[in-house]
Image 1 (cartoon, rainbow, N blue to C red):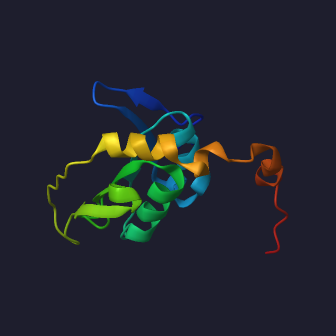
Image 2 (image 1 turned 180 degrees about the horizontal axis):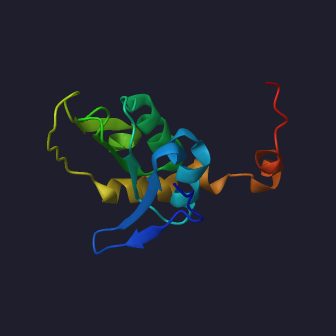
Length: 141
């Protein structure tokens, strides 16, 4: 397995979609990078043998101002579709655990766009203070 070197965002006729894979989703920075690159919908592709927790999707949607889809090879364990309806992250559909399933939901990208355009969270970011995020951490293990 080789780690990627980019967080791609693709433009489709309905909107902009960012892709992150597996372990990237356990960190807040990849989703924020995708969002800052314009992603309105983030697709998180997982190969976990356990569930993906819904609080992770809700946190990403809130912090990154994007709708989200997570997929998981573990027979539905955390395969979900989320949206930011009325500025509140919500899980719209979730595959049943331990079963193969098909889920669908309608995501309102117009509402995502409105939230992004009016959010103080985006306009008042302070990237000049983020140097600590890129400094190596000395392990205490």
